[in-house]
Length: 576
Picture 1 (cartoon, rainbow, N blue to C red):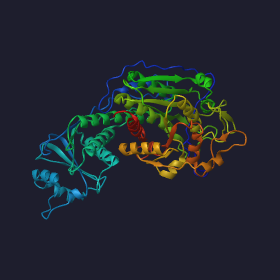
Picture 2: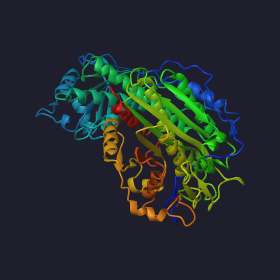
Picture 3: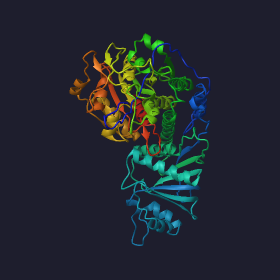
Picture 4: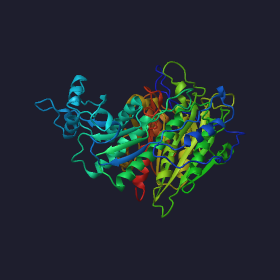
């Protein structure tokens, strides 16, 4: 992704592929896959095998074969005071903690629990200064209930969003890990009056948050502690087939997010373009009833005139791999064709405009394939869900942006597969060069709508911070669809302008365009660049996720984008 300032070298560049004498045709999986689990399948082992086979890696590093925790989620209607297990986790708002004149709880559920505890809960909440604010939690070892412990987890003044309930689920997971609990029950102190649809979405968010909160990527650690959590009962939000389906959906989406996190977390000396392509091919092998895979090598990309993509890849010793997965429903007719395009720079050095100086983040440039991780994570989830009525193409131009005597230089002119020429005035704005040919390819599949995702610009991070992705599209209809999907998923998006007058800074004196404009409006000019490679008849959106792709506090990937993409595809499907 491109840097945004001359003084602050905030470069988040994302590189591309090389050209000549690269040969890797199709990659097929040599491993079988276990059936998908509620949280995570045994795919971690297979990914470890794939990465370990990727030749002797620099540093002799291979991910360990970790066994993922198997968590079952169940919806129940039982008396919370009689539930037997390790932790009863109660989500409480600040209002729920209101006391009566005798210092007891007014809330019916808290009052019932506390009566069994002889007032211990009210007393402890006061002594611990627990007020129900978001982020607060307290866990007590108790006697008098079926549960060994009770946890109060703050929801804030009121909680109604998916993101808030996901955070609640993550807090439940943290409490379970701390206590090494194997069985947990979750209940909201105030769930009366919630609509059926709200109960479904709340259960989904809690289950997803808990599943993701339990996950720890320990594949590259010599020692790791396994989670004991095996079951989560969600109480008070109803029961029945619809809720069971929603909880399965939460498991499917979570497995896709975890897959995306693992891809981004894997270092560039392990996750090369070839390994990324093999991981994509294994999705097609695992869900062969709905997926096919096509992996193009450099020579095949050359035949398709992908000069922009191959120009980026030229310097690397690791050959480029152009990934195309196609999902077709197991039955029925196709009503709409979609494409998800992800930036796939497995490492970005910046090229000859090398990333240097404080804030350049070169050590984090393994995450420059975060867009492709979101796309492939969505593919994995959709392979389990199998929606009807929709065909989806998943496209990734995978490569590295490196430096060598055969590499692309500043001032070079490359020609994209739609015939447009680009003067490269900055080799550290390489991601858009790879996406140019990927977008042309996606349009040629006959799709009606395209969403591309990329860690494209530091400018977007400066504008929106680390938690919000910027979206750019000329289509109000598509913007509405994707924003609605993000509201369900709990991922934060903000629509940014596509200001056509800014294109003036992207004009070249010797080619059709340059690949970067001035400092101002860098995220906008990057989106305007991508627009040049999309057919006018196709609805298109660009998502710049350079901020939310990475959690700096946890020093780990987030899996951002997977949940929104899955939800968007399902909204376009004939049934969910």
